[in-house]
Each structure stands twice: as structure tokens, then as C-alpha cells.
Image 1 (cartoon, rainbow, N blue to C red):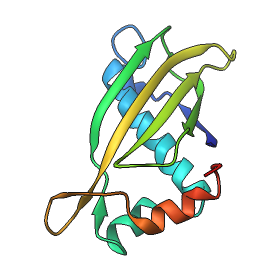
Image 2 (cartoon, helix red, strand yellow):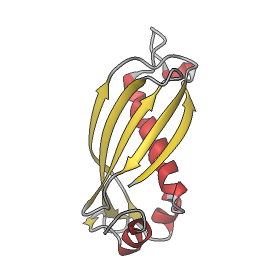
Image 3 (spheres, helix red, strand yellow):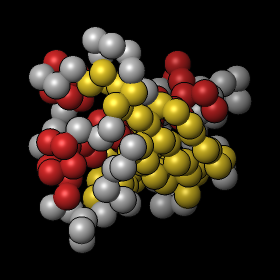
Amino acid sequence: MIQHETKIRVRYGETDQMGYLYYGNYAQYYEVGRAELIRSVGITYKAIEEDYGIMMPVTSMIIRYIRPALYDELLTIKSSLRHLPDQFITFHYEIFNEKGRLVNGATVRLCFMDIATKRRIPTPEYLKEELSQYFNT
């Protein structure tokens, strides 16, 4: 399993009229967590796209809203990859507020797509090799 923590502060423009983080902005926070988790193991989205010609579009997202995140609150996004990717790569998230209380949880599944053909492809072998060291395979 791979885990990574990222901190992000709720900005004014991300909140609704109540001062709560607008529900639609959570997906952007997951993306930050996902990109930083991948970066923490020495891979970048930029390299996946530019060097290997692969995109990773989201295919599903399951979200649990537990309590509101508030304007100017420093949140901790705990991202994890619990399984080596097969035809999909699935990330799990927990977002905590400054008091350490769970605010939100989510599971986001992505697939791999060849940029040139716009067709779905299996998990690239180089990615499996890079990630396998973190799993008992």
C-alpha cells in the first residue's frame, strides 16, 4: 500500500455562502492528493502524459460528506493506493480538518487511455513495475 499526506488551505473562492468548502471542489482536492501521492514515488502526471502518451481519466467517484470544511481551515488530504493497478487504478482519500476530525472520504477510479488513439489501454508495464515495490506481489 502507498500512502501520502498533503495539506491544503480552504480558499475564500472555494467556499459557498455559508463559508463551507463548496461540495464540487472536493474533486480538485482529490486530484491534488493523487498527483502528490504519485510524485512521492517518483512518477509525475507530466511524465505519464508527455513521455508515455497516456492520460488517466476518472471513471467513477464515490464521495462521503461527513462535516463541512470551513474557509481558511488547513486540511490534511490522506491519499492511498491500496492495490496495484489492474485495468483501473483506484485511489482512496480521507480529508481531515485542523482538529483531526474526518470531514470527507472518497474513492476515485481512473483508467488508462492512449493520448493518440483516445482508446483505453491496460495498465502500462512501466507503471506496474514502479509501483510493485510498494505491494506484496
